[in-house]
Amino acid sequence: MAETLAKIAIVGRPNVGKSTLFNRLVGRRIAIVDDTPGVTRDRREADAALGDLKFVAVDTPGLEEAPAEALEGRMRAQTEQAIAEAAACVFVIDARAGLTGLDRAFGELIRASGKPVILLANKAESSAADDGLMEAYELGLGEPIAFSAEHGQGLAELFVALEPVLAAYSEDAEAEEEIAWDDPRKPLRVAIVGRPNAGKSTLINRLLGEDRVLTGPEAGITRDAISVEWRWEGPDRDWPVKLFDTAGMRKKSRVQSKLEKMSVGDALRAVKFAEVVVLLIDADKPFEKQDLQIADLAMREGRALVIGVNKWDLVEDKNAEAPRLKEMAARLLPQAPGAPLVFLSGLTGRSVEKLMPAVVKVYVDWNARIKTPDLNQWLADATSRHPPPAVAGQRIKLRYIAQVKTRPPTFVAKCTRADDVPESYRRYLVNSLREAFDLPAVPVRLLLERPKNPYADKK
Image 1 (spheres, rainbow, N blue to C red):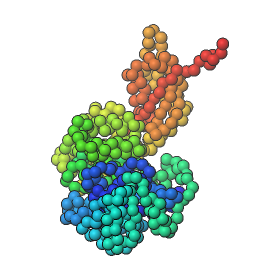
Image 2: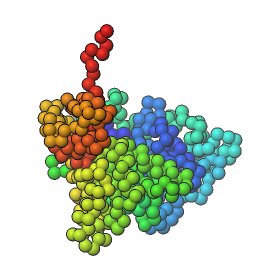
Image 3: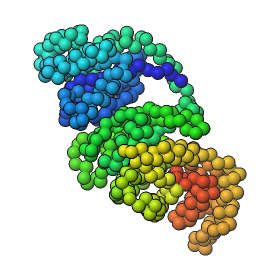
Image 4: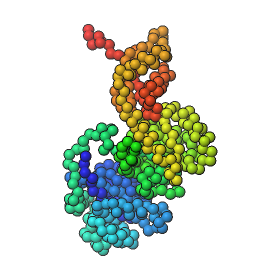
């Protein structure tokens, strides 16, 4: 395993180009970038490289003066936490706009942190930035680097400035070894998804025991998909976990702004990257159309599914409501007939401790591998109980089955007239397979193939 990499926090006031720099350093478009100030609201981290320097880049919200309880104040707290955890800060200013009062105030904040500071005068690709570049010396943070995150200008100078900062950190030059899915070192990737204001960020903070991601009464605070590393202490072993907090996904017709479209796209990518998807629904408005579409997306992507019923503390008759919601889940989500429902409250912490055991259970099922003799015994029993139908007077025969992959469990059965097997019989086989091998909450893929004719290639 590679050693822990140094964290480099990218800080500055809103709209100076921090996320553009972050995307350039990590080598792909992760952070949402737009001309609207204040797009980034949570800090996010990703492995980055500059030449042969390896580190973790941390994108932060724009620093703003605001009361601690206001949204901007909570965003500032995220940035201050990033500075505290970082090995060094890259302080970004807009060279075209010149120094502002905010730049000066936050220059003092960063200096007071005692962390090494690299000053980047961004948007310096034209002569219009010359005056701002000279003004940057007034911050007393050393010589500014004339930079353009948009065009990649100044990367060589940034490399020279970062090199001594990172020299104290050892780095693993070898490629990371392949880690088995159940290796105690391998992080379990869990995406928390749902409609806006379902309480996703509040739940993550409750799991972590700290205000790691931004929360509040305002709907749609989270814009980027934020990944957070965490360690869950299970009853049998500790599990390293990578949690993804995602933007709320609304009905497509209601997603109007360019920013929200990018946020939803970011959430969809988090689902594809995750191994287990926790669909968080509001106990007061359960299983709305958008909830069902998100669950269907997760299953189509082949992800294991857990349903978290949040705000359970607000439900008065819990004994009556719990069975009603379980019946709704079974009826409305037939593609995940046994997906576990966890009734919890991220705000009060009620039953939150039940979520991770359910996540681990479906993760283990998602990686299940079944022995071929057991599969073929099941196939014989299943076809004996309910034989395949005849098509055009000819009987369909299923001869052999084997598992070809995991994550999710995928099986191939050799079958005469495979293209003619009715969808209803395919569903019967999948449901019987789920029941026989206890795979209720994960996608199960069953492919039917015609057996090869051994004489087909002979003349």
